[in-house]
Image 1 (cartoon, rainbow, N blue to C red):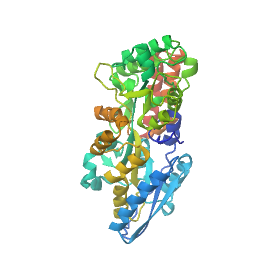
Image 2: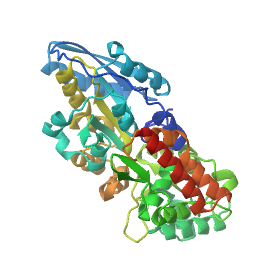
Image 3: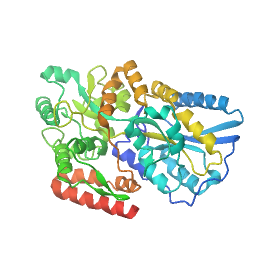
Image 4: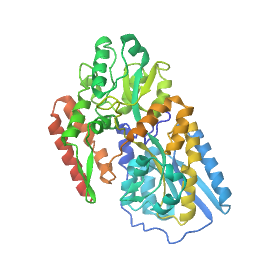
Amino acid sequence: MKLPVRLSVRTAVPLTALVLAATACAPGTSDNSGAAKDEQSGTLRVWLFQEVNNAPKKKVVDTAIGDFRRAHKDAKVQVEYIPVDTRAEKIKAAFNDPKSAPDVIEYGNTDTAGYVRDGGLADVSAEFGAWADAKDTDPTAKESVTVDGKIYGAPYFVGVRALYYRTDVFKDLGLDAPRTQAELAATAKKIHQARPELYGLAVGGAYTYGAMPFIWANGGELAEKKGDSYVSALDSPAAQQGIKAYTSLFGSTNCPAAKCAGMGGNDTVTAFASGKAAMAIGGDFSHQAMEDGKVKGKYAVVPLPGVKAGEIAPAFAGGNNIGVLKSTSHRTLAVDLMKHLAGKDAQRALFSGMGFLPTYTDVRADVAREEPFVAPFVKTLGAGAKFVPASPAWAKIDASLVLPTMFQEVVSGRKDVAAAAGDAAKKMDDAFGAAG
């Protein structure tokens, strides 16, 4: 489930096919009720995700652990970097067998609600609230560790998407970067008409996290809170308008359905990086793929526009968190280790080494000044990113391809927007109802 360089599993989070594997692996419900002991010495076990190039991450982690050990001389730390594509069974076993469980884990932020339901994560609300660094946490990142008002970890990094475009193509055709979604669609069509070998804007029927901003920009929502659960809002007029806006980008005038309906996020990024598209919606984590591709030196990035000029379409806030397991017998030490791993110094170093965006607004502003390519993504986050419903049902909704199926039904002409959205909403409601 690894993505291109600097692209984390959870950020692309997303990039639907890859995110599905992340969100579909919540372990079975456990009777884990937490450890009675809070030992102040001994060895803490940590599970972190193995990156494609893990050396920079390991260096950051080793530094954080060194700082932790200087503060806790009787404590040792054992880190295991686990393969992402096989982590589901390891986490399931950890939740169901506390004796084999680590004390601290890295996990995808869309997994939070499911892991809380399954009794795996410790409530660290009090410690988070008293932590100085946490006061500068981005609100959306904080939302990703929050379930029913309680906090179950510390945000580790965040990833969002913006609009990549070919500066050479735009210059040749006398075009400006689009300022609205209507201009985006019109510009894509102008490019494809003038340069038929290019997709004007590469889009994918399976690119869930590239499509969501269109729903949100038009005033729609994926779901709304109702009591202790959620109900789908995909069939609302506003959400349907967003679905229509996104699916209108498919066809012979931009990105032919026969080629683009099955494309996911990785496919659209690859199309742009390889020179086959004039625009694409990609993440900050896609930057290296562009630098390694044919478009190096010939592209720029702006926030994805909203409906009106000056508006930025809300982006999905992907990313990872660091959490403490409820079963730990070293709670105080584990929480402090979580703070060292996910603190400001560590996140600043993680950005330098891996390119992952910090979850702290002040640190993010600092790195944007250091690395100009980050600025459009920081601006996007500042405009207000969005997150998926904080429900354990989301894993089932995502794994069942509810949203991609809806988009593909519209793109293929099998259903109109109202029918496809209505069917998707029913599937979501069934999942929310089953989750309780």
